Amino acid sequence: MKSKISLALAGAIFFLNSFIASSQVPISQLPWKYVATQMPDEWYGSDESVRVAENILLYQRDIGGWPKNLPLHKPLTDPEKAKINDEKGLNDAIFDNDATTTEMKFLARMYSKTKTPSYKNSFDRGLKFILDAQYKNGGWPMFYPLRKGYYTHITFNDNATYNLLELLKDIFNRKPLYESIVTAKEISDSRKAYEKGIKCILKTQIVVKGKPTVWCAQHDENTLLPAKARSYELPSFSGAESCGLIKMLMEIEKPTPDVIKAVNGAVEWLDSHRVKHCRIEYFKNSDGKPDRRVVEDPNAGDLWGRFYDLDTELPYFCDRDGIKKQTLAEIGYERRTGYNWYTDAPREILELYPAWKAKWVK
Image 1: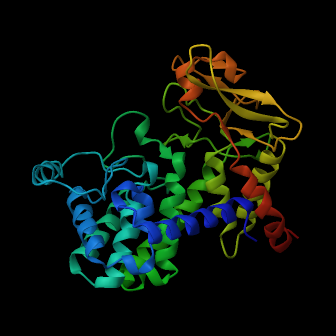
Image 2: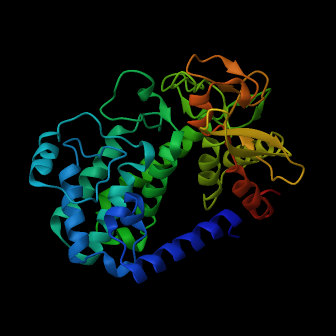
């Protein structure tokens, strides 16, 4: 059963593809992730896509991964290419913000169309980077090689772990996109890494009074406990990042009793922690700046807090001073408008759950 969110996304992609086809929008004006994975199938292998692929090979770091938040598909001047080539040794290869997995999906599409050896070699290096970066406990840091600070924590934030496990699962399940680009050993190694990753998800799930709940956005790589990231991202229950982990567990073809227990506990927690009868309203404040506030609305759909206090289990909000507040209105303008403190991501999970429960919960 497709969720309303998934159907809406599919409709948006269809519309965007149609718009591109009819108006010839330059790819430089499109998001990199869209260009990498959502262009019309016949585009991959075209002269334009080959020029983009040259950029992707150039941006790949010596360690095998890619940096984040860069328009990797935009045309480069010769001086820009020289600078990027000089930066190949930088320690900025990352899994956050869809980095590395997006580039590998693009390379797989390109290799399936062209069989260009350099694309396969680049993909292989990316996969080795992912496998090498995985902790023995099955988690992944944000950066590899490791950087000091919260970057070493097991990173669930921004669906980093979900994206990695999804890629590994598609590889060992021999999805057509990856059939020709991976070896038998890479398939085996991907399965082992995936299984370790699932075990890590189960081991890091927050348990309260004997009941499994949800996860924090990041967990300490040694103790596996909820951990702090940036000053306003405190150890907490996550109403947003937990959704990708639940979805990954629900996608397991033959879930074990431990997996079933984990999903049931997480869904029950989300169901009981809805923020009801309110919506986010965007407006211009007295200074004429765009602002946001929470408005009570009996007709509004349910929301969830991005983060919930580990003791009170209530949503919290805070500025860069790290002091928790109970309402969005209590924090300053910069963090109030520059961060998403509410989410509707659990809606999809709660829509998918009944069919999953009917199949697996006896």
